[in-house]
Image 1 (cartoon, helix red, strand yellow):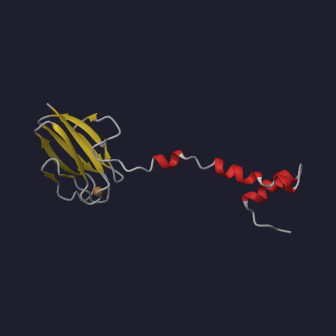
Image 2 (cartoon, protein in one colour):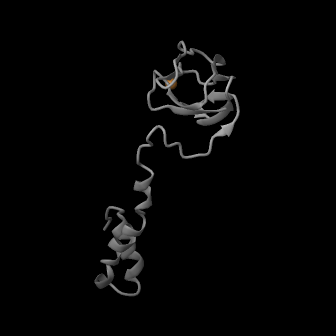
Image 3 (tube, protein in one colour):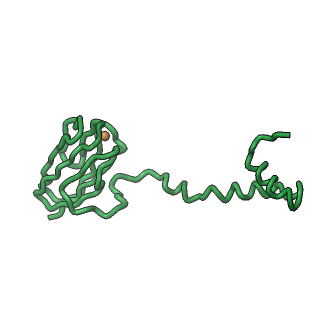
Length: 140
Ligand SMILES: [Cu+2]
């Protein structure tokens, strides 16, 4: 007599050789173990200024797969930072901390450069995809 192939049916079948129906309730316990609560912690939204990784000392940022890489960089004052779009999608680089607004970087290998004259920490994002964040930390 064919039954639907549910997880409980499999567990019951495995146990049935030893003991019959009294152990079928064990199937519920194994399901709970496959759902770790840690998965929820990664869901929190980052708060712009609080970049998680240490900034990388570089003046070149790539835009790839809808993300700035590295997302956090550090440069000395007076450095020109260049962003290069590696996506086929258009992106841009805009900041309210620094008067910086790129044109739309449409097409692969389109670049945008900006010189950071003053020390500080500048958060920026993609004007088209506001979930794309980055920071430039400018040291004296
Ligand atoms: Cu974008």
